[in-house]
Image 1 (tube, chains in turn green, orange):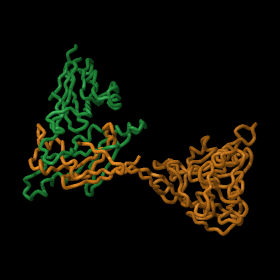
Image 2 (image 1 turned 90 degrees about the horizontal axis):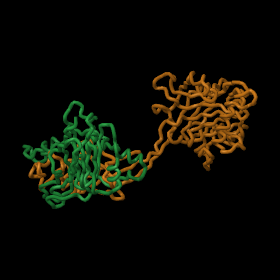
Image 3 (image 1 turned 45 degrees about the horizontal axis):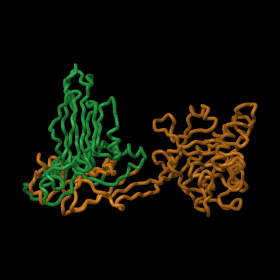
Image 4 (image 1 turned 90 degrees about the vertical axis):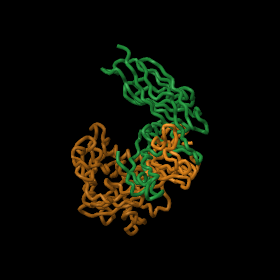
Length: 219
Length: 340
């Protein structure tokens, strides 16, 4: 992955894997209707409000940074979206899944019902558009589905099955159901399997990643 | 809050014609020609020769065009079966192009009003002519020991465009890059004395058909004494005649043309929009902004634009080459071009 030449402001645009898939499907689902902006790669600790040269230089370190080229993996880009909020907002939306980390024994099930904090004037709320949940390694779960959102896309994602390979799987719902794998061979000589689940508010853009540990109990 | 819908005027599809030299590496004039002895020796060599811009064994060798000889009665090549006289590769080639151009078996190929029973075909490789050939861009020099001729198409002079089964049809006339050079022959500029035009230029299928009858004329009649051999059931290898004439002529200029459809997307961020960042480095664990001064004077830095469908699927992504500062005093307009 190379850097973009930042001597002039240019735009490097590519289709994502998802975009190529929907374009190939040819069913009209490849139709751009909305956009979002993000500040991926920016570290706001580089913003220096005590810069001795004054406010024009607070963002100097950020504004000079080179930017990486676009990634085609839609899960690795547009991570941190910019939000439109009233001036004077002091708190930004956050996702609360109820778990800082998830530990499941083989065969055990769990339902996650995310909430969004500091959103639309409410301390805590459920987003009408639901949440997308992505498990980084789908092999560690026997069941991974979303419920509560009944759009065609949500139902298609929930019914998609990928077997045999270490790939991610994304579902949509207001509640996400997980059941840990019962397959012993995945563990090898280990007693635990580890992966992550990423939740994104489909309306707010707020995002949280939670580590997932599957504990071996079968011999 | 994070997504903004496009207005109708924000997405524009623009189709623009782009012309470029037809040959590999954008070479304007192909001056050297190579065949592959391997291909010529195989069965396909009975029908056509592939022509390369460099030695066919070179790593950069690419087929530029193919040449073929066609004869309506099959003369000039060996019959497939001695019991069926005239059914030969030469007859197959003639009838193949006759069907392509006329769409019927009832009329033979006609060039400027004159039927020619034998033809030479130059079929441009698809990757070279892209979508179509550009009328008025052709310069083809054919040379024999008796004479030489420069050929181009008459697109600049035709009052109406003739459409056949192979799309637009132009006559091949004496001249270069769309400009005729000869005085009127047979009553028409650039034609032979008694055999009509020199062939047809078919830009939509990437083919040049040369009239064997016209080329066989003597130089005083407008031809170059091609001396096409038309012996029955004989491998006369007439493809070699055209190849030799190209090699001696050393000039083949042609441009391709294609329509590129681009999707222009205009992303407009108003002054009041997209000023807050959900970036974890910008907020504390409880969601509070890291820097107090950003409560009333928030600043964000745009590095990426995501284009979504109604299902919030990320279809395309655009990265800016450097962060673009956004606050309540600034508006951003980003133009994204998607080609597909």
